Length: 198
Image (cartoon, rainbow, N blue to C red; front, side, top):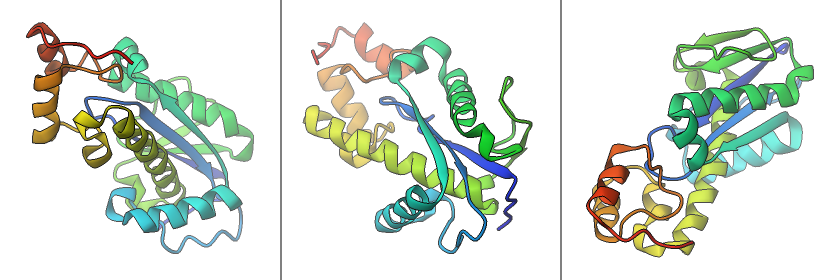
């Protein structure tokens, strides 16, 4: 796994779900940081993610941005993701000289020169760290949402369009954190389902 001390890593979680935020993290790892155990957040267990996240928060410089469901509806999901990346990089730009972005494109208007790395969360330590922080943050949000709106099961599927989520969406209609710009949510509203109050 590569790592450059003058480069921070940026990753996002939550572009595909029908509900909740897109969460973006930027992380700069200090010299001497032990990168053992870092990797694609989706490939780690929840316990491993929590352990690594605690270490990253204690030792690294980072900033996490949650672009809300309303932001996703306003900007579209790609626009919201890139705006989150701009905000996250701007918040810690003094820590590094470059930004490494997970994916195949660098957002316009970054506060630092950037480069895109496909599957960067598997190959770049700082991107992997950003992936972990973003996922831990988003999962916590969706677990809390599951307590508030238990009929949707957010704590299990985290807002992704699983069969049980789609069934609940069609039965109960969207709740306040559903993304109205996404087709299944829009369709549920058009079918006249009740929109739940916060």
